[in-house]
Length: 305
Figure 1 (cartoon, rainbow, N blue to C red):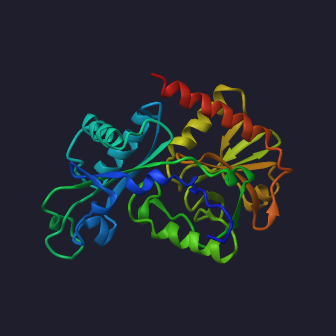
Figure 2 (spheres, rainbow, N blue to C red):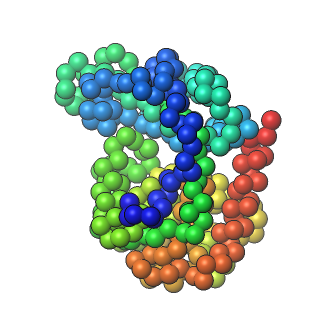
């Protein structure tokens, strides 16, 4: 991204990550030894699904929600996970223990269709079974994120569900990568993506919310990732008397917002400083701060021993 500017996934430097151990199909090896085949469907075609999760106090936050999305996505594309969610939890537990990790840990769980017999597209060419990889890192969001990030509206849009449904957390992320590159070219930290009808939708990496006159707005959800953190924020607003609406709205309304923030498993709620060079609000962000506090309390309760 632009020099000396944050991205939504910037983490504090942690030297321990240089020697992490990674799960690859049942083996747990040093990161320098973790490898998959060039014939793997994930490397070759982006044929796979993934989940991002966080570990607090030895427990995975909102584990069942993440597994619901993961298994639903795999089922929808005929991708055999090869184990049930108890098996996934066991693999996660083994990997965390191998790394001595208990809290402030971010996990990338990745499943592909596995090694292909030939370098071609058809799924039936993956005959060896799925490839499961788990990467865990000691990870705290960088302090610079608290000041807010800069968004630029990009020409790349979140497409229709019958082209590539954004609800799939798939390895095929080129659409979002193009949006990220467009934002970088515009001098921003992340791209704000519209839906096919021109309404504000999401960013290239996170779900997007604005606050107008005490009301929290986000997109209808028709064209965005069904984010676990997004859903938790909506529920928290409803439970705590904060008006929240899933609706169509335009850039005009986003530019005039009092606050804006992104949601994602890594950053929880990341404030937005500006959109297309226009400052958002006065920087006080009272509603965002309240939601952040409510969410932090929810995580504590969900991961309590």
